[in-house]
Image (cartoon, rainbow over all chains, first blue to last red; front, side, top):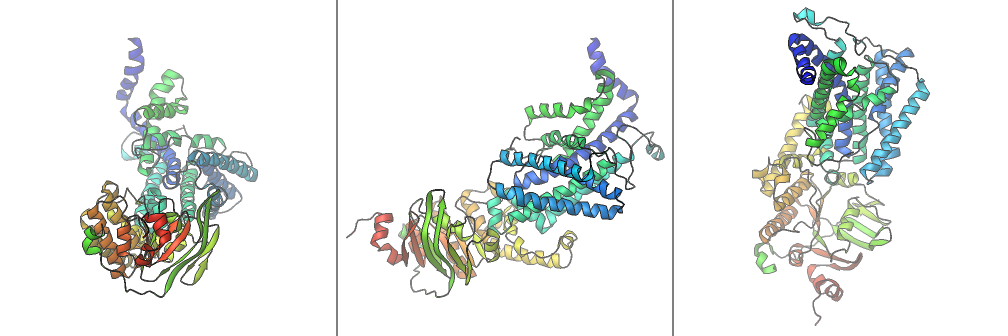
Length: 322
Length: 273
């Protein structure tokens, strides 16, 4: 009886007592969730069109963040540093296509997956060799704050007694803009149409003259762009160091929820994971389990999800399990 | 069979074709130790319907795949409109006006009929992303022109009713027709059809035959097709090339091929007399 009281009634009673706190947690959770989603979208773009599960996406986020921060520290203005970083990401896309994917055409998905693990280590080593292993921060005038300190009473101005971090709102806003942009790109542009065709059937695409090699470069560049956006927003929240790569793997449970082939799915999955893990941490984790439940909660949720709907919320019924 | 096909069995004799559109010379294709094609040469002339026939495993599909660049032949060249290629990439082939359908239908199954046909226009779109995004000027004019072409193909193939149906849900015969439509949307000069009538019932076969002939006549498209059904081949082809075990066995008009002893031995299996 006491157990039920503690674990099932207590937390909800607390929520009911101070509902604004729940809202704050949800918004902060959404902020995290959109960041996970930004990384997950990078996975989806590549997987959808080429069937490659790109383990290196986390490393590419790290690559983008560290290059951006490094170039800023070297004294470049933010727009120039950003542009160079984007160009470097396109270079990465071209090199990956030429050096890795082209020679592995027709290999099994597992082989390609292993290759991307190799790419991941290579990129991590390369950027650290160039910029050093010290943690960096991105300072480009975006609203910043560290992950778990609440430092800005934004909500008070709209009459709600809420404490919200600007960086969370930034993540949500940027995420929405990016998803909208990708949607317009995929549905209304020639290249977007071609990419959707490629995602549907490779042979058919080739027969109408869509050059697959060029498409791989484009999808890797696009996912590089999402990595760059993720890195920029993330870099204002946390320090840029190799652990970022591990944190980027939070995109995996997001993908399991949202499905490997759906961009809106990645967004919804990200929101569910971000919000639920923070609610759990706030109302169950910290008071009852000694905290740090965000480390594992998302993965447990994904595991439960796999039992009931392995294709994810929005994924195609037949998927490759990685 | 030839009799029952009736109306489509119009005579193809008497048509003359001079201009060579595409020529394959000495094509040899091996997969590991297996020879799929050995030293095969023939040409396709502008405006004709050219058939490639042969028993299973004769290398017919491989030949088409070499022509539009899906396979890379170890030896031999492809001469297209006077230009010689060691190997043509699928992209080059498409740009050069070579369209293609497949034995095991390759459609964008998640898309509607209309969208499938529109993908055939991708190579011909020139407006930039920005123009397209704001639906302005050139993008608008282009889109309308592409629509027009696609509508013409839809009318031509009589697939108005299924224009907004996702093709994955269509019956087999209609899928084949949509695939032909997508190839036509690219405005090909040469159309490669890989067993366009395979697995169809009689009625569907008759329809498809009619479309093939009409495409050839109305659009002036040169057609190279692979087919199993001998009566169909003999009825609609101008010239036929026969492959057997990856080698060219015979080449000529349907009548010549029909009476070639080597072909009769290897393929038709009819008694000599």
